[in-house]
Amino acid sequence: MVLVGVSLIVFSLIHLVRGDPVRLALGTRYSQETYDALRHRNGLDLPLVQQYVTWVGRALTGDLGVSFRSGGTVTSLIGERLPATLTLAFAAVFLALLIAVPLGTVSALRPRSFIDRFATVISQIGISVPDFWLAIVLILVFAGTLGWLPTGGYVPLTEDPLGWLERLVLPAVATGVVSGSVLTRFVRSSVLEAMGSDHVRTAQAKGLPERQVFTWHVLRNALLPLVTVTGVQLAYLLSGVVVVEIVFSWPGLGQLALQAVRSRDYPVLQGAILLFALVFLVINLLVDLLYSRIDPRIRR
Amino acid sequence: MTAVPTPGGTPAAPTPGSPIVTRPVRPRWRETLGLLARDPTAAIAAVVLLAIIVVAIFDTAFASQGPNEQDIANRLQSPSWSHPFGTDDLGRDILARVILGASVSLKVGFLSVGLALVVGTLVGLLAGFYGRWVDDVLMRIMDMLFAFPAVLLAIAILAIRGPGTSNTVIAIAVVYVPIFARVTRASVLGVREEVYVRASRSVGASDLRLLTRHVLPNAAPPIIVQTSISLAFAVLAEAALSFLGLGTQPPNPSWGLMLAEGNEFINRAWWLAFFPGIAIVVTVLCFNLLGDGLRDVLDPRQRTLMAGGGR
Image (tube, rainbow over all chains, first blue to last red; front, side):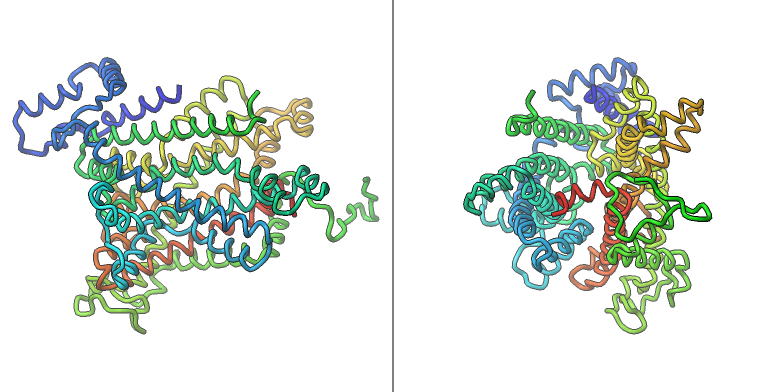
């Protein structure tokens, strides 16, 4: 149901543009044949309802039309860019968890301590920092002043593993900090809640060693909901990397989408947005399924 | 406990340190402000925000040089007494531009969140109050909008409508309408069956009166909290969109646009991109802190959730 709505919204995108999208994209110099061919290939010469049906039918088989600019298929354009965006998003989530789990746990175990206050302040600032500004500052410091890391670009892992890692660090930090902050706060409150719960008090009353209570009763229960929140963060990251990709000239989907906007390449934009929305929906669905598997209380 | 009426008919004043209210209370402005003032972080955040807003309103009074006034002889000057934030590649004063940028960024923020607040609250109110098919139809539409990642949706809207300030307002508003609708609906569902609502209905109050006199005021706290937090994200979103060249157009400065301009000179003049970024961080941080403070005061149930049972 939501999928149909999403496809309708994405489909209508090209029709809400004022004027003829093909004409706008081609500019002033083009032959009538190119114009007709492009219109025909993207199904724009059909009546509206038929257009939608054709478009959805083709999209289901993986055909998202042809770029107005390069003439290549949208699917292959997206396919080229997808690995870079996925790499960045997963690296950022990994980094975020790496910060959030220890920091959140420690600050929950020692509420109001120095480290707790420090974590609270840092995560509060982390949520408020624009990721692309952080990206600029990181480039300025680590690529400019210190000269430790390259300013941007992307090389595939298979060609140059070290260069891949070098180029991944700064973008991953810039995108991961916001998620890291959100997750730190979440881990903190989640661990606190678990520690205040009845079963933990029972375990303590039974005289179990603190360490055992902590790993088996506190952490296990506190980190369960983290799966959901991490999944949601991943979904946000996949779309949130758009601006950071621009700063680091990272050849991902965000850059593709923005180029498509600038050059009025609507089929590419439609394809990119449809894909993002699909990924968003699928991740949310997976998170729900995963959660009901690991938390028996949800299963009925 | 029945309150003993004191002479003169005024009810007994609550004893200091009276029990913590455990459900959203109807906002009473003086009380809210009083409680908020006792939370130093939120109070400071509110004062800083107020200062930023005042500076943004009287923008020209705070700058020695016009924000678009060029002075090529003094281009790319590092921060000094005459130009505390330095100058850019056209010799324009960065401080003056950051101040004007405040009015642009805040204007977009307030307008877009205001628009989203009005539309979203209305949708959530109707969906939550009437339920059934009204709820189904409205919330399914909201789900569809919600299925798009925020930045992408805004970019798509700007791609259709063209770049510019007013279209940025619309784009950000569309992104936030479903959020306000969801928050409002959830809150309305919580108060819809309260005794005072049913009592009012049973004495023949109209739907309009029920909604405006009973449901909305009691459902308001989470919406107010959401407004403050949304303002933070709206300022961020405006910055991101302007940074991409889709929001505010030159020569007018918005913080995001200044960051984009500064990014080109990043290796020669760090101050171009540094100060607008700091302005964004401070503003967003204050809206977030104020939002947290408001939540503590208006919606204590959330606080106990956040603090994990008050341990």
